[in-house]
Every structure is written in C-alpha cells, then in structure tokens.
Amino acid sequence: MSQSWLCAGRYETSDKLMSLVKHAESDAWLALGLCFYLNVLPLTRQLSNLSGSSWSKALQGQRAQRIEMLLLHEFHEQKFMLPDKLSIKVRTAVSLYSVLRP
Image 1 (tube, one colour):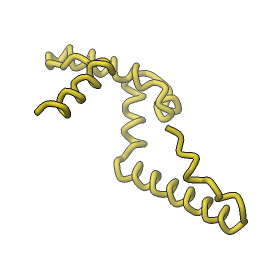
Image 2 (cartoon, helix red, strand yellow):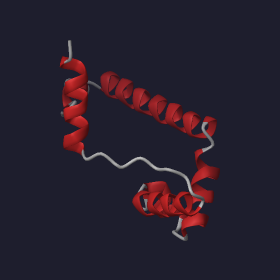
Image 3 (cartoon, rainbow, N blue to C red):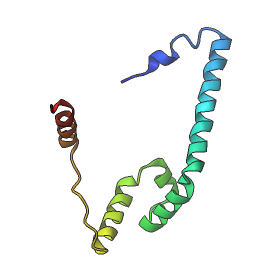
Image 4 (cartoon, rainbow, N blue to C red):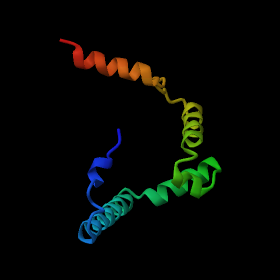
C-alpha cells in the first residue's frame, strides 16, 4: 500500500517542503534513538560474529536468514524444542480463523 498521499502537496511551497524535511529528520532521530535504546548495534555485532557474516550485511538485514538458521542449529544442539515455521498462507488462515471464530 503506497502512502504517497502523505507527501501530496508538500512540494508546492518552500515552507511546506521544509516542513516535510523537518518531519523526515525527526523520524530519523526517533529511529536512531530507538536503535540506541534497544542496543541494536552491539546485538547485530554479536550476531554477525556468531554467524561469520559481515557486520554491514547484518545491519542491512541481508544475512538475517542465515543468522536465524545458525541460531536454530545451535538451539537444536542444546536440545531445545523449536516450533515449526508457519508459511504465510497458514499464518493468514490461522489469523482469519481466530478473527471469524464465534
């Protein structure tokens, strides 16, 4: 779903454009603050060290599936029970069933 309507009319005057830029900047600062609050940088560094992937690819989310598989294998070696991954179709069906169930 495109949200281009949020920016509609924001390029008409310089004041509106500056307002859009200020909102974008505040959103970026909010995301950065959230990353610091959640300790994202140290956690991604540790995950990339564990998986043997580069840190930049872990930050971009390109190695998320490999990191997930390595963690699953480690959990399996430690004898943890792991649930099966549900496909998107099954998750959608389950969520629809729980919503439509009387």
